[in-house]
Amino acid sequence: MSRNLKEILQPGAHVVVVGLGKSGVSAVRFLLNLGVKISVSEGGRQENLEGDLVRWLKEKRVFVETGGHTSELLTSADCILVSPGVPLGIAPLAAARQKGIPVVGELALAKDFLKGSVVAVTGTNGKSTVTTLIGDLLRGCGKKVFVGGNIGIPLAEYLAGPQDCEAVVLEVSSFQLDSSGEFRPRVGVLLNITPDHLDRYASYGDYVASKMSLFKNQQPGDVAVVNGDDPAIAGWLAKAAEKKSPWPLHGEIRQYSACGRTGIRACLRGTTVRIAAADEPGKISEEYELAGTPLAQAPNSENAMAAILAVRAMACSPAAIQKSLAGFEPLPHRLALVAEIDGVTYYDDSKATNIGAVYSALGGMRQPVVLIAGGRDKGGGYEMLLPLVKEKVRAMVLIGEAREAMAQAFADTTRIAFAGEMDEAVRLARSMALEGDAVLLSPACASFDMFKSYSHRGEMFTQAVRGLGHQ
Image (cartoon, rainbow, N blue to C red; front, side):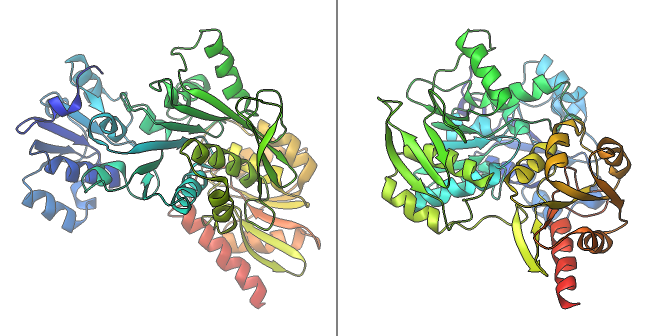
């Protein structure tokens, strides 16, 4: 997009916000400060909206259409702000684009409205952990930081306020990147790419391109932190080097790897993160110790490398980083230790809603595993997990809509049982585990067939495990 959004979003301009979730409501708040005429197009029914929200929108004289998106409303706009949950290919948005109406998401606002340096984190798995960790490390270095985006507070909410932070750390999803316009992070972090959201993307290649687009607007002086062990990322970097990718990479690429190789800036040796000198790649210039922290075990040790490279690019001192690493507390439902009962440890990894996340969780396990998995299938198949399941999984307890398909995929690799609900799954897992084993809830699926959210699923698992302890 060549036009400055500040020029478009002038008082009196008509802006349509598509989608009235958390991101959409924040977009309305941001737009109210600009004096534009605001309309909202919401796919859900009006009776499903909270009464307070409906009253607030009426009070602010915001027109609201519900029950779907009409081309009539969207093509009357000067600009459309689309929420990440709304597919960009729907007919009314296509009609608006055909008329030359800008269709953007909240990330596109950053170029013209955001003050401060941006660190943006994406990847199929680990985004929230790394975003939170980068925020903690920057605060430990004495910086005032906003942490949000796809996690917590939407960017538009921050833009609507005083913007009093010098650093802005954003978790960004592929859906947000697809409508990000000329969004340019000072530091972009790409953790991994494994099959996910294939119900929304035409192909895995399209999903990979969406993730890589984090770097498309970076300029010399910006930094791209990437996982040097990820084959999809490595393939794209090779294409970029040969000038065969859709856009060149102008930022400085800093790679991290669990097993150091030539050209890698950060690598692991045991529980120590080693950073190579910029001018002498073979020489180690810094070391950070993860032992005794929740970051010592994979995949969090890889997450720590990414975060350290990001904050070093933001001029944080090694001493301040080491101090903050020691105090980091992981987010809930991400390989969280729930309990140890009769020599068996129980881990809640309910946030693992795709195959790549489960692969990472199993890869970091040092003992045999009884795996509780299943839910609503997200597409992409389970083949990637077969070698690790064969190596590490003593038994599987399968739940939810995907259990038959998963049983078929893993039939020849491990013992399998079915459960109707979480209490039964935990009891079955306990009966199949031996002393020294781990029972791991790492579903590889969405939660909405049986639970309100992945958090609800994790809470039910924790409750069932604690019930075992009381017995």
